[in-house]
Image (cartoon, rainbow, N blue to C red; front, side):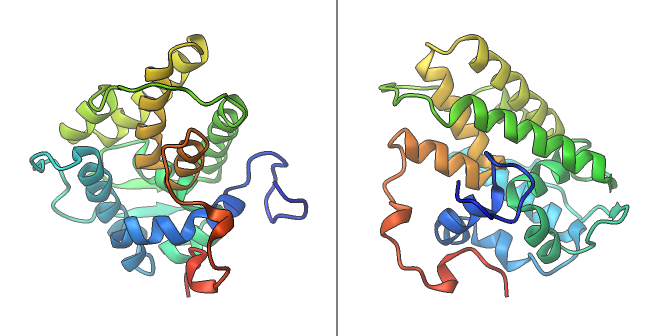
Length: 221
């Protein structure tokens, strides 16, 4: 990561990942960016549906998506998606909105919850960013994370994602498990997930070869 980037960590920087992959993620997850300026409750409902849709990968859609926007409150944190996105990035924002309770129930965000998710992603980055390329030809497209999502348990899905990361730590030689973890991670954390999949040559796009125009940096006007 380059020096002087506007974030606390020297080795995991969501803003740098956003600059590299915003052009791709904003196109693939356009439904999120279209409601980014609205309330966190509205954004959370769309986010839950987006994660579920991308987890299904062409299979029948589930009826587990929330039917309404549950209220999201916070302590000293931005009340709308655009500002929160600018402050902490999409990856931490997504985990914070989906991790604690099902999306149809009210949620209260705190600074401690945001810091906790940042620390977990920092640990993921330290564990995975220097891993060699794996040659897994087949990996699970269905796992405990996708099963929880299909059952409308977004909070359980995030818990299963964390559990899966512990399994990855304990089984570094299991290439199929690792790629399956990255695929699940990218559902909730598109920027770090895309970067790690790109390092495994699972993403065709090259961020270094793209145009440097502002509209391709994942910035919100």
